[in-house]
Image 1: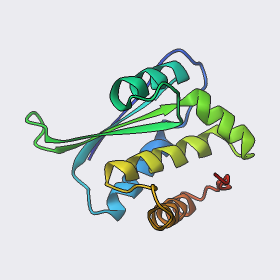
Image 2: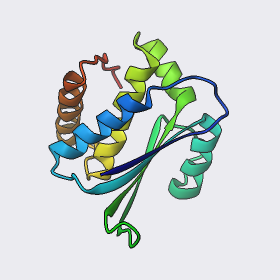
Image 3: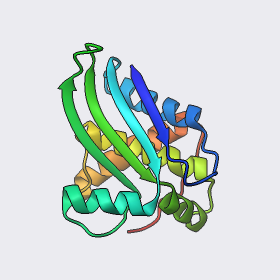
Length: 151
């Protein structure tokens, strides 16, 4: 398994990359995907808004984006699952709103984005219930809590 974490230098906020890598590993291990590559990028609202507009046609920011790549990397022989992009600006707001740490919020968003790469969605209540149960299970394994904000 290869996990690359990129943190843009716009923000001096220290994020626990080890925690985020563990969150990805647990999520992939639970889905029997031990030999894949994934990239996690921590960035700001403007970068996420630009990606959202370019690739999804939505001129707004969001907390996390996931882009499946789904190809075999000829250099490593591993399957490149995709990219997860988190807005640290949005994560900070949500962490504050939900009374938990930025690391907890980033871990949750990392799990959430990785699940999207694995094919999970939350476009209807049944799918959402399944995805939220998996997220909660992984957060519990990490010994982290995150109060769910009602949508």
